[in-house]
Length: 99
Image (cartoon, rainbow, N blue to C red):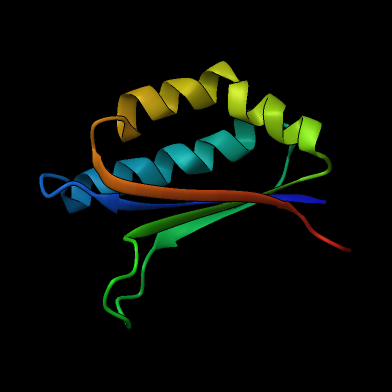
């Protein structure tokens, strides 16, 4: 299993409506990209200062499946349309997960 985790801190001009649009689009990605085994995402619970605002966790059978997801036009369109220019900071990591 291979896991991708990405966290965003939104720019100051991002509102709740935009975050809802991101969430809906992410739900659509899991339906559109068959290489996604499991996909979870959501806003930070706000329990600790300094956290990022939003997280996406995707599981894939292999690193190759992750790369297919990463490069899928529906995913790159999502980034272009809803993420690019709207984040103050981003952190990501990919790693192997033991079953």
